[in-house]
Amino acid sequence: MVVAMQVTIVTEGDPDRMSGGFLYHRRVADLAGRFGATVRFASVPERPYPLAAVDGPAVMRSATAGADVVVVDSLASNTLGPWLAAGLGRRVPIVGSVHQGLGGIDVGPLRRAVQTRFDRSAWRRATHLIVASEMLAAELADGGLGLDDMTVVPPGRDVPTGGPPSIDQPGRPGRGLRQGRSAALLCVGNWLSRKGIIEVLDGVATMPEQSATLHLVGDEDVDAAYRHRVVERLGRADLVGRVVRHGIVDPGHMHALYGAADAFVLASTVEPYGTVYGEAMAAGLPVIGWAAGNLPHLATDGVEGRIVRTGDIAGLAAAMTTVATDEALRYRMGRAALSRAEKLPTWEETAERFVAVCRRAADAHR
Image (cartoon, rainbow, N blue to C red; front, side, top):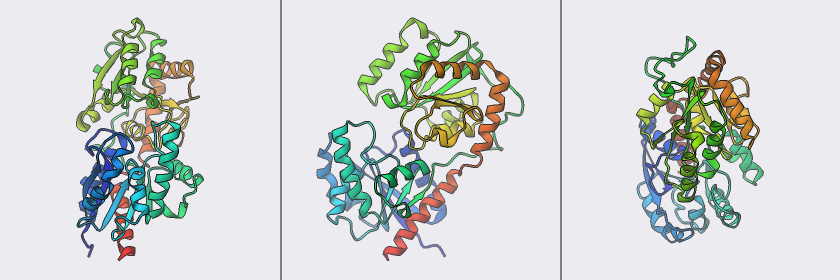
C-alpha cells in the first residue's frame, strides 16, 4: 500500500504565473494525488534582491509544517541557500527542482555570481535534484554538482482527447489564424529579451507580405523596458496588419491556438528545456528557432523544423518563409514533429517520476 505523502514546493512569487517552470509545478501538483502525494505551495515574496532573504526562516517554517518533503524551486534556491546551509529545515528532506542554471537567468554578472554561490549552498543541502533536461544536468555537472545526485524529469505533454492531432492530409483545418496569408506562425513566450520577440518581428518584417501572419502569446508586462521596445517595433510600417497580440492565454485556449497554427517560432537564446517547443511539436507543428538552449536536443534541423544559427535574422526569416510557403514541407515536418513528441513523457508520467524522487527522499530520511 502506498503511504500518503505531503510535499511542499517552495517557489518565488505567485505560483499561478504563466511560464514553463510554474506550469510544470502546477501540472505535477494537479496529478500527484494519483501517486499517493498531496502538493501545496509556499512562496518567497517577490521583493528587490536580496531583501527577500529576510523572509527565509518564515517561509521555511511554513513549508516544513506537516510536510514529508520540501521541494525548493530554482527560482527560490539562491534566496533560501544561506538558510539551508545553516541547517534551517533540517528535520525535513530537501529536494531541488532545477529549471535554470546556477546563478539564474535575466540577471547581471555580479548578481549571478552571488546567486551562484547561494544556489550551490542550497543544492549541496538537498538530498536530490530533479532537473528539467539532460542539457541542464550536464551544465550543472560542469558547475561542480554530482550527476549521481540528479534525476532528469522533463516537462510532460498533453495527450489530445480522441487521439493525436489530425494531420493526415496536407493543409490543417480551421485556418482562421492565417488572415488570408499562406500560413499562421505562432510565437509563445513572455516578453523578455532572451525570448527573442524582437528578433522574430525583425524576421517577419523581411518576409513576403502575404507569406504569414504572426501570432504572439505571452505576458507582455514582465519587463517594462523590453515591452516598450517590442511595442515600438510593432508600430513600424513594415509590420502593420501582420502581427496579432493575444497576451496571456489560458491553457484551454492555448490548445486551440496550437491546433489552428501552421508552424511555431521562438528565437530564444536561453531555454533550459523549452516547454513550448515540446507543446508545439505535440500539436504537430514544425518548430523554428535558434541553435541555442535545449531546442537542438528536442528537434533536428530539416526534420522536425528549422534550427538557425543564433543571431542570424536573415536566416531566421528565410526559414520562416520556406516553412510558411511550402505546404508539403510543413506537412512532412509536422508529421515528424508529432512522431518525435510522442516519445516525450506525458504529464502523468512526469508527475509519477517527480513524486517517486520525493518518495525516495522521504524514505531515506526516515
